Amino acid sequence: MRIPFRPKLLDTLPGYGRQALTNDLSAGITVGVLALPLAMAFAIASGMSPTAGIWTAIVAGLLISLLGGSRVQIGGPTGAFIPIIYAIVADHGVQSLLIATMMSGVLLFAMGALRLGNMIRFIPLSVVIGFTNGIAVVIFISQIKDFLGLKIASLPGEFFAKMAALWGALPTIDLPTVGVAVASLAVLLGWNRTATKIAWMRRLPGPLAVLIIMTAVNAVVAFPVDTIGSRFGGIPRDLPAIGLPSLSLGTLGKLIVPAITIALLGAIESLLSARVADSLIEDRHDPNQELMAQGIANLAAPLFGGFAATGAIARTATNIRTGGRTPVAGMVHAGILLAIVLALAPLASNIPLATLSAIVVIVSINMGEWHAFAPSELARYSLNYRTILLGTFFVTVVFDLTLAVELGMALSSLFFIYRMSDLTRIERIPLEDHYGVEALTREDGSPRILAYEMFGSLFFGAANKLENLLLMEHGHPDVVILDMDKVINIDTTGLDILQTLHRNLQKRGAYLILCGLNAQPGSLVERSGFVDQLGEGNVAANLTDALLKAQWRSGRDPEVAYA
Image (cartoon, rainbow, N blue to C red; front, side):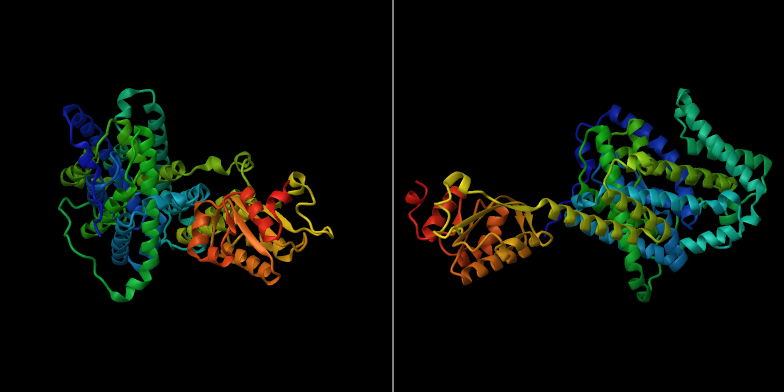
């Protein structure tokens, strides 16, 4: 099988000129300096070293831009992965995380190769908002330790154990750390607000600005707080050793679910980011190519000590706002990060962890769609929507993302089945109003011909709608006509109920005539052999034709009956 593989970069190179290169360089430099503090902050919040975050941004960022299906997508570590990665590291260790990331890369590539990119759109909006807001809360909770300087050796991954550990450590609050964190928060918020009014400030992203300011102040004052140097020993200037993570066959089985979780979230985040980018630049991305690029990036990043990566909405939007229009901007962003590491890595030792925590807190607040939880907003939607949204949110916060998505999809499916079943109905057609009573009844007044019209979808959730026909509540006619012109779909359960109706009528010497079959129902009836079971002439093009056939079946001349 030939796998279509055409990176978006190839479509942008023809006609690529000096102006496009200038725009991409400017955007790439801006996004590169923005990605530096975010990569370190997300890595530390995930239980990894800042070096791992930076190399994830470099390697994955380069490959996603080079091979991806979007013109402007920027890839790298994102906040959405924090609770997942932290839990994997806490439960299985760093080496297992690297293996799970590579396994997710294989899954992502397979999804793209099998052309499953568009299927991600089948996840309902209520599920997406629910788990996104839930992830934001989990990220916020994970930052309490570093924001307050709590003395906790290792923060548990499980929700209740984590809350108990945080509560028990509250007496160990470190005031200098809180001071640095609050000051960082104030500088970041103030910078973002002022940058809307002062042009030169907009060129320096808020996270990088607060990182530079607080690092410089800490280098001069030497606050008694944890820094990258004190906890991680700084950031090496050397290239990382490339190699496979240590593999134990005994752990592979335990990593299947984490790998699926990483792949699922990575696919959702990257394609959501690409769709947002499409709306901003009026373009259309290739979801399957994007998934294959994400898969390759997640296969390669662990070789450099990196971890899971996906499309980053905030960095992608920044790329667009600063003029980036081709994948070259994303490649420049990766090159800028590499240059910073090789040239300025020693300066990172003075970065306060409380400052990085403040950056992640703002990211968690901004990533949530909190307006969706407003009572006035919830009141606009159905009980089903509210149940899915709040249920997915709750399970994401208290348990884990995988279970939350499973629950959300299960509830969505059940509610959809119920709704489709509710919309499917069957009604008796009052033929006597058009053709008179004598043409349709026996001498004793009992019906010779009954006609019904179906609406909707005859599937397993709505098969009970034909129960009244099986019971023959309107009498025992010689012919029953089912007008299915408004039936859009039949599944095998619906076909079975039709076959049961046919057998019941056949036992009494009566006939079933189907008419108005659309493409899918007609195809299933034909392929299943049900047309042969009904008998020649018992499938009609429309109701008029069916009525003519019904009179012949009941032993009367149609011209006389309908005269």
